Length: 252
Ligand SMILES: NC(=O)c1ccc[n+]([C@@H]2O[C@H](COP(=O)([O-])OP(=O)(O)OC[C@H]3O[C@@H](n4cnc5c(N)ncnc54)[C@H](O)[C@@H]3O)[C@@H](O)[C@H]2O)c1
Image 1 (cartoon, rainbow, N blue to C red):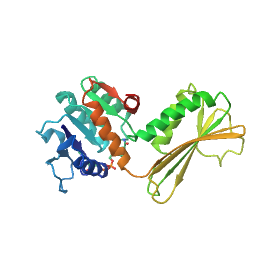
Image 2: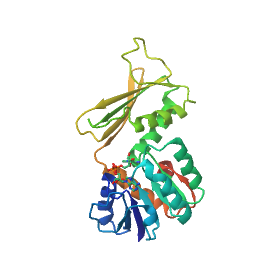
Image 3: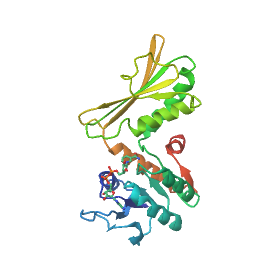
Image 4: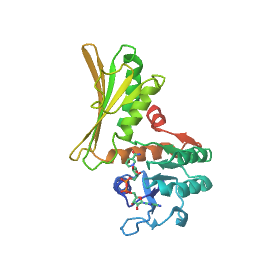
């Protein structure tokens, strides 16, 4: 049985993972870490990772960027594999993640949904074929009315992934109302819709002469990110030190 430390255990994602693990006989949470200790959990909870004296095979993190430096110090010293899911890390912190991955395996992805990451692969493949055939590329993302940032980080990551296949020659067009002119050939339009309780939807439209191809992913609950993080944890425990991403998991 895999022993897991849940870092950020009392947050929304930490609680979704705790529930999933309760129903999974292959893995158990041996300890949780959270600055918020006012929550009852079926495992011991420590305020910081350095207070935790319980050994584990892997750590899953869904916390906050400020908590990551000390978590990285811990995994570097203890050589524990880490599934790092917290978003909004600075460039400096991302560099530190890369450095620490020389000592212990780290799985790092801004979107733990297997589906979104497969969508990214499919979008790249479609771009390689369709851009040369003069298809225009537009991304439409939809999220709930509480979301602050727009466009979503995932929409930007999709655009980046496709632009990699286009030698980074395409520019991003976020809003068309200010420019009264025709669409340029080498651009990717990115559009954000906000409303209701939409968990997350990303569509990529490849519009050509008399035909349209649309690739679309719809997230129906936060559970997909938790399922992805657990899959990454199972994947990571047998891996040597290094930096891993969803692509490694999807491609085996
Ligand atoms: N990679 C993905 O697919 C993915 C998916 C969902 C959320 N996220 C990211 O995961 C993070 C957490 O998301 P959430 O929705 O669970 O947020 P949340 O705010 O509900 O939970 C964060 C938890 O971390 C705890 N915390 C804060 N500081 C801490 C510290 N120093 N040490 C330990 N714990 C600390 C908080 O008390 C809280 O319980 C965010 O950065 C979010 O963007 C990533």
